[in-house]
Image (cartoon, rainbow, N blue to C red):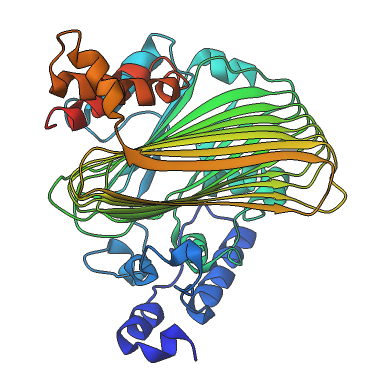
Length: 454
């Protein structure tokens, strides 16, 4: 018997799902995908908590609840702007900084996806001249139908899982990034996802397509507008690297301490394509992320790096995947987690090499640093190797700071508190250096904030 049938409260939440938002910019074929996703969400059971992927987080936390949500009547609350923002200077420091960097030529695109206002997208003249496309996804559905039909919901569709089906139903404008063949965008593209000032769910959706031999970097930042409410989010990101392309995708999550968030990302690589994923998680009450690369082509290269810093009673649940479907692939994952107070982290990571996919290399490492007795970390690395001619390794460590390292600093006159901070900074610094230069000082600041109370 399904979990939905057992729990009448959950059943009420599932059946109360609103109709797909009526967005005039969405073509019929796109609206039909959302309608089909709605039916699939309502018919699917909750994930089985006996499976390790959901052992540490209650899936009912991510069920839709209308609350004060303006979507409950099936109407979209957003407007679309490509010229000016509705947020006044000083309201969102991150957005103000991004606009300054855009004006200075340090960014190629700044997009503000404000849950309560406009979707504002601004490009530099150089990015436009290079052919870069950055549009609301619903608007791009008509202008770039062939490209979007070929990719939207192909890596993360409604069949992916119950909560991915929920996002496929309720996303509104979304963001579409497209670099045509042979396009090189040197400066990062910065997407800012500002949560709602009221207690409600939002459903960001992103589709990134890198054409053949193209190069681009996307920074995707999620943060709260109001520190006192639970501005919950369910986000999906699909990245497609076509033949010979290189894509760097950075996701920064710094929601407030009340927020529940569910995040799913999949990158699909064609022949000779490369990707680098950097995931940094600092915020939220409960944050569950599912990150992965499907190495579809031959001679692909995928690097994944993670950084989690938990405090208070935060709960983090990260899952990563490297799926090798083409020969001669190379992948490497390094996920670092730092926990203090009574925070908790669960990490599960899968490397899979399909049958007859020879000459692949895959490495996976998860290192957990516990700063006090109340913090707790779980780690489950996995290998599914269906081919003999491969090189694969995985490993995980969980433990406190090495007292010998602390003693080294103490013997040189450095107080214990400062010694611990220096060790933690050294632990995370290699990951921070992988971020775009424009992001590094701010993220280091988030680390230092957590270290202040040690």
